[in-house]
Image 1 (cartoon, one colour):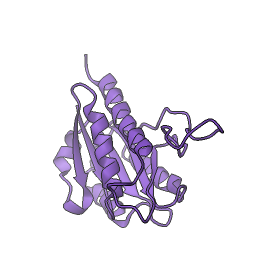
Image 2: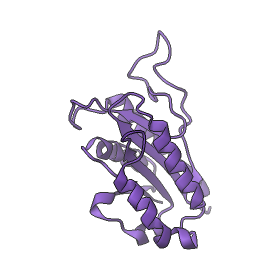
Image 3: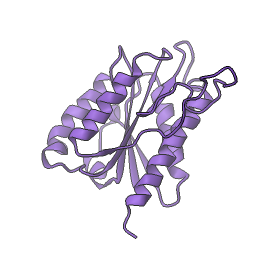
Image 4: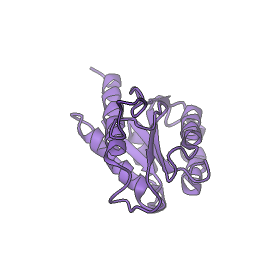
Length: 188
């Protein structure tokens, strides 16, 4: 099972989340993760051969990054016009410097993009963490998202410190979930 992770990262935080997603993919027997930073170019044939594509972007001003948007636009000729990604599993993740930062808009943009390609979107099946007096910021899904993974990195912290471990573990969970679902779609 080949799962590609296509992402952009302005300061390194989203790239760190992408690596955590890839680690989660690698926890599923038979699954292989390929990381593609859009700034380095995209291998369209590998994306076409992938069983799933997970999209990742920082959230800037409530939107995905310009580079990921450019990748989305470039995919029109490379993949959309012939629906080359039809029935592939898709998922997404985003990071911002604000705890909320309007990250939902970025995930909605990714999900709509995937829908237009005929892909099957996979969200999180986790209850929200950190939502009661007995909960903790160390909980999985501490930012309470179902559409995809939301992470938060303080703007004054480098990628080796932020996002926090709970967000990275949630990203691993998404990678594992996508790989497990891809496995269900594999021929017996």
